Length: 478
Image (tube, rainbow, N blue to C red; front, side):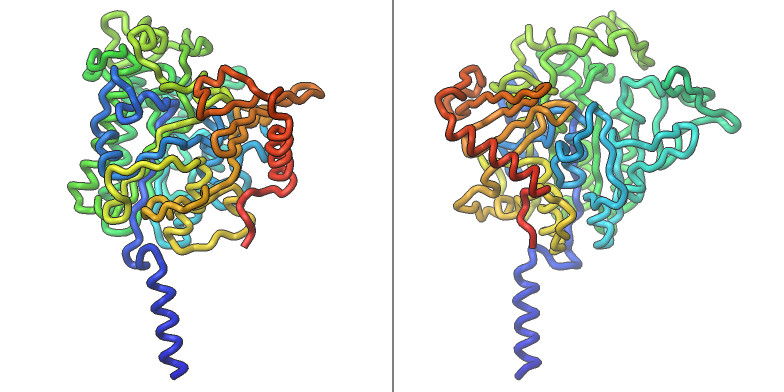
C-alpha cells in the first residue's frame, strides 16, 4: 500500500511538470540590438515590412508591455543573462561584467544537459588583457561555444571572436594596443561590416545543425539595427524607411533563416523561440562614431554618407522607431526600454495571442528554470518572475509582479518604477532627488508630469524602490 502511494505521488509530481525530462525544448533567444517598439510591423510599423517576425507573433504570443532591464546595451544584457536588476551593481558606463560564480541562463541549462552557444554581440566583458586569451567571457559564463564581435560591428577591431581568440589572426602576429584601443594586426581576413550579421547568422545555423539531436540553447544577438546602420547591399532600397528600414528588413530575413532551419530539421515543434531587443532605438543618429572608417563590401552611391543620417531620414519618411512611446535609448522614458517581445512554442503557446502583463527581461531566468523544473537558489535570479503561466494560457488574475523597476541610463541614478499604469521616474543628482509621475493609460507621451498632485503615490512607489534596494531582491525567497 505504501509503495502504491509513493508511485501515485511520483506520478502526480511528474504530471505537474511542464514538459517531461526527455522532451525538454530547445531554447532560442534572438535579441536584436537597439530595435525599437515601433520597428516591427506587428507592433505598428508601416514603412517597414517584417514578415518573419510577424509570423512568430501569428504563431505565438506577443507582449505589449515588455521592458528591457535597462535602456542601454550592456546593463540590459546583464539583466537578461542573470535575472538580476543591473542597477544593483552600481556600475557606471556601458561595460557591465558578470560577477564570478553568478548563475546565468547558460549555467542553468548546462546543469540539465543542454549544449549552449552565444553567437553575436556579447557586451559583458572578455577580461582586461586583450593580448591574452579573451577571458572571462561567454565560456566562463556557462556557454559551450561563442562566436561574435568584440563590441559591435562598428568597432575598430576588424575581427570576429571565437571562444577565447580573435578569428583569422596570422601565426606570429599579436594585438597592438594604442592609447587603450586594441587593433588586431595581421588578420588573414578582416571583417566586412555590412556582412557581419550574415556571418553571425551562418554561425548560429551551424550550431543548430550540429546540436539538433539533443537539447540546445542558442543565445543569438545580431548587431542590427545598432549604429552604424549598415544593411547588406541586397537589402538597400527595400523598405520605405531608408537605410534604417532596410537594415531592419535584413534583420527580419536573418530571423527567417533561423526559423527555416528549425523547420527543415524537424525540431521547430520542440523549440521555444523568443524574439526581443536589448533596449529601444535611438531616434537620432549617434555622432560619436561618425568618423569611423568602415570596411564595406559595397561602397557605392554615397552609402557612407547615408549611414550617418539613417535615423533622421527614417523619421522624415514617417517612421517612428519607438512607436507611440517617448524618447529612446539611454532614457528612463518608455521609448528607452519598452521593447518587442514575442514567444513561439508550438503546442504550448496559443497562436495569435497577446498579453498586457508587465514583463521585464530579467524574467527569463525564472521562466527557463520553471520550464526545466529547476527551483532557483536564493542567490540567483533575484529579480526574476516566471511568465510560464502566461505562456501556457493560464493568465493569472493578479499581475505576475506588483511593481517593476527598470534602469533608465548607463548609471543607476534614474530608475523607472511601474505599478499598474502608474510610472514614477526617480532621479538622483548630486545630493538631490527628483520625481516625475505619469499615468500611462492617459499619457503615453509622458508629457504631463503629475507628481505634484500625487504625493502619497510617490511616497509609496519610492518606498518600494528603497525596499527593493535594501532587500537585495524582489523575487520572494523559497
